[in-house]
Image (cartoon, rainbow, N blue to C red; front, side, top):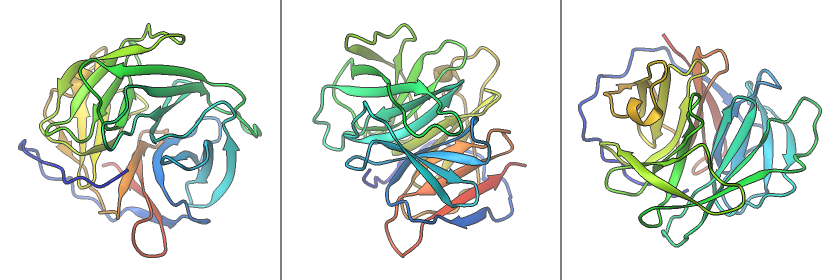
Length: 270
């Protein structure tokens, strides 16, 4: 939600040479985009969520930057939504932001991706948890396609920590997220898994890192390897990233911070 200077302390390869990304003005304006996911049920559109204090809803945003629809989520609240993941046919919303590290409970909302024509999300499952050590501010998480484990990445620690929620999480009791790794930088604001599961992207405000993932390898293990750096057009406060469903590129979207417009960017991978 709030900017944080990221420490980049590991040697990484230079960004791949690429043409300028496609750029589309978002109309009508989305003020505080905090998570995006490319839709399977509505091809050519993204799901978008906004930061805390905004309505508990999904925004349907075309790849052309045009807002098409807003779908309320009836049984959820938006304390501080910070990332959005589409895993299989399930959408996960991460209510994981905590700027002041003041909370002892966080929630991941899980529900089937709305089909074309659906006008509401009537019911969601709430995965409630806390961290094993202390409160953390986080803005990124990933769902392992093989194990079903959920990996959360913190933002404000001196080095971003990785926490794991095992796939056998409870829907009736608070779960405990156990530490599973650490990154050599901080300031992580979003993350996503490629549709084929073979790579993971981690985004800070200033950089995008791509990690290779072998078949059957856990996300935590993949994040221990050395990443490559991907092209990124600096945004005012870019907190959202996702792969396109065909895996050929990735989108980024910023909160509105300066100027009058917000842009949706698309980067074609080489």
